[in-house]
Image (cartoon, rainbow, N blue to C red; front, top):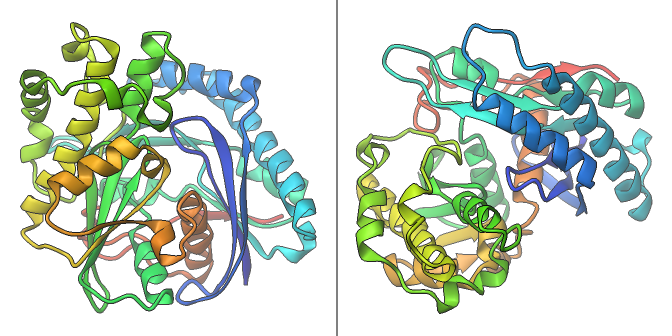
Length: 368
């Protein structure tokens, strides 16, 4: 089937889109991929929804803004896809299924005394009605309800992508979005995964808090800063890093307060080192060294991040493009693939990726 996948990351930068032809197991063809920047109106409402989600108490009604943000997200997805399809000589009738992740505004990992909680906003029903195409969505809820972390979900796609490229195990794939997550492929169908620590999210939040832009473009601040080893050691003392995988994060799980005494450039350099060192600790915890690490997601565009990874890790660090992958579209491709698996009733999360007790299906489909 031909599936259109959507992804909007926590950076609130753009709607990413990609088309795959897949049966949810093998990938027969890679269709076009692209993005459209979020409008200021949609970005603003998602930011406010995220702000309110941080104070949303369990057991209380959802903040009213969630419904408005979900509608705005669906309208944004539809408008982006209209342009994308037209630019690639496609029509909605050429698409068999849509995979819509939605905008994450809240992610809380499970604790011994309570289940986790996760919220992705996007009105799948509205998108299905406007497009006339079935929409697979809500990929994380069933996993969380079963005691899983609800993240990461892309590992099964990382395996399929590696197989489609003719790559061999053992290898690892690191996605650097707001949070960084790694997939280990040991061979066969054996995959393990977890969130290593912050990705771009903390850097973005720090730069925004200081009125220095929305992100550290190409690492220009970090490139002239110095790592504060004391602050770095304090950040790495967070109990998350001692917890065994599988495990997951929200980009707000680490405080920016320890960085407040630092100049902007030093804070950026320290956060780059924090991200890279967290990845190194993740590999050490897994106790295996893959033959290479493939980096995808927005973080690979930051030369300072790539330098830090290469300096701290014991294996070659490659970009997605080194293997002909579309590094900015991997997540959108992943949710196209997961949508196909949802339609076929195939598992999307596993004991070693999210901590569920058995391989689990996930997602729901709204008919067009």
